[in-house]
Amino acid sequence: MAVHIHPSAIVDDGAQLGDGTRVWHFAHVSAGARIGEGCSLGQGVYVGNDVHIGRNVKIQNNVSVYDAVTLEDDVFCGPSMVFTNVHNPRSAVPRKAEYRRTWVRRGATLGANCTIVCGCTIGEFAFVGAGAVVSRDVPAYALVVGVPARRIGWVSPHGERLALPPSGHGEAHCPATGDVYRLDGDVLSPCNSPI
Image (spheres, rainbow, N blue to C red):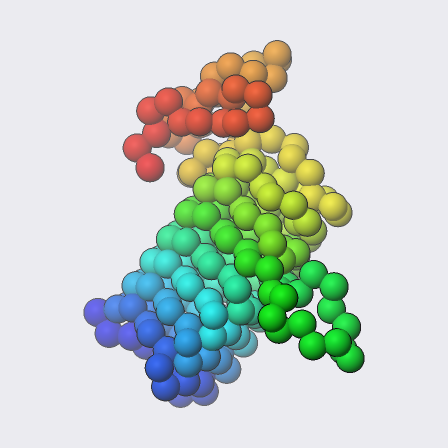
């Protein structure tokens, strides 16, 4: 399947785009970017040089994926969400050598207008709510909301909130698939999930 690049988009020489990837209106992909198969980059998306994007990643309109960001397979970036790469920026102080790496693990969702402060890892299948500000690591399957973001629950890879027993630990079932998960302390693990 061919790569589709809208005529208004700019893809610099050297950028690697996987089969079936679509780059839409006014997007800009820098020369060093590596983008996997079947991705979609919406209107006004910017992708930096030191960026790695897996397969089937959806980046909605007006998102800038700056240097030092990695998005694994099946990540969803909602409209106008924000990545940073400098912890303490100052216009007069060059800090390009101090970028902090941000890692978004497989299947995670980053809601519209959320902000991911650099240096954080977002765990597999985690769900960051719209408008949240993430300033520390988010565990796999965690549902986080607010400013600063805090965990309010757990979600399945299907994107459904898991209902835990009243004790707050033990087994939970995905209402969409029936898959079973076990919460042990602050770690949620699939018991039989096929993903």
